[in-house]
Length: 598
Image 1 (cartoon, helix red, strand yellow):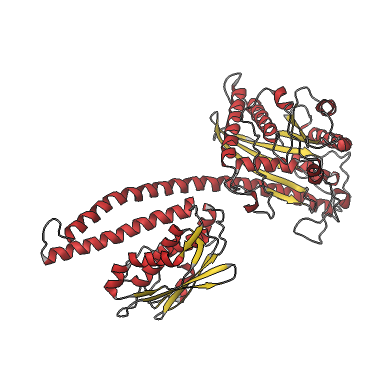
Image 2: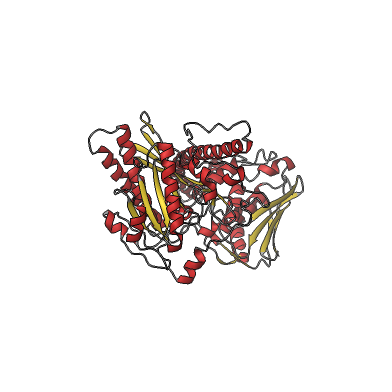
């Protein structure tokens, strides 16, 4: 059950979607999830049967932030709609602060809907003592199908209280879903504030509820503008429900109740509708991902809840012979507990992400500010070295040249820090295009020519051909790899580097082989992390960021990097670049986990 923490000024509320099986409850919660989490940063937890119907529940934690001086947190649930899961429905409904009752508008399902409504009212009376005291919102779903009941007919059947608002919807398209959610959330928060009397003034609870409405539509507006950032097909498919794209017709203001209820929706084609809402028979009821295992229903366990009086303040205590009943009770309670803990953990994760983002932004600003005086210092030293301000004595010129080398090294470190920070947290949007790899590597070699001349090194890069890649990002990759090959040459041995390309079918394998000092085998697993270098690099200056940037950029193309190295012989880096690169979704959390070896 939701609660209010007066000391922390936090309101926790539980919203449950109730209705018949395959009626649109999970799809509605998916649409809400798609609005709040367009990048899937918070998962919608779903446990489904093989016919894509909810088995235990769907769960979505929603954090609205600060509204009216209170932190608003909503836990969204759906119940299994199939009649055989009646005990599970009662468990999930326990402690609800508001209910969205989803009606399948098809005329053929009227009796099922009425039975589900009666089931909800019975469960509310069993858990709360009454079905009059809790906010309930009606959502008339599947309005795009033929042979549906009119809204007036539905009102006569389902509006058992005069205060119930009804919203026509097409859950698969998102029409009407968020309107119903907003209304239910506002009523729920208003009810809890009034119940606990935590806000001063007669209209305080209504003012906070209106603030919730405004905040929700602001979130929806922002989600609509950003809905194309990550295609739905790129989001995780297994064990989590995937949100459908936010509809173009999403309204950005909540008008009066009657106007919302009667707003017409564009109907989908008959063929599409028949296919979309086809109810298939379950073959054995096996849970998704667990082939061959049977789902335990109330009937299977021979638990009769029709007339039982149950105390829901604590889990039911089974009799000595009711081993199956005890197992079901413990399973459902454990899953609900896990879902709630998941929500609390996810809130902490989001808080940490915000703190990390603040630190990254501060770092980026600091590095950016350092770049200005550093550029001025490098320009001054270069001017002195070239004699533009007069001839310099031998020792002075040597000091200026040493300072210029140090400034160049610091400049590279500053740019590496900035690139690494952007890659780790913000991600780098790759611009894939046909790229002349031969010309790109030749340009990098010209940039490194002064260092090659100084050490007598040689880079061979003939016949590289063309690839589809981000040219600017790939230039960074070769600057780091070829620069490292020169910097980590064996003492007294001129560096020799060979760049070659091999056709790997659906990928290009670009190899960069050198004859340098090599990398100890024990250092290989950590070499691509930030600020990590080989244990045999003492005396060679470096940032420890170059290979990390290489890995991030190659992964940004959908590829990966392999490394083979022998100490005293040399190293070979192989870039596996897809011929048709696709940039994966960037996740700061996964990056943090990788850095922490999680």
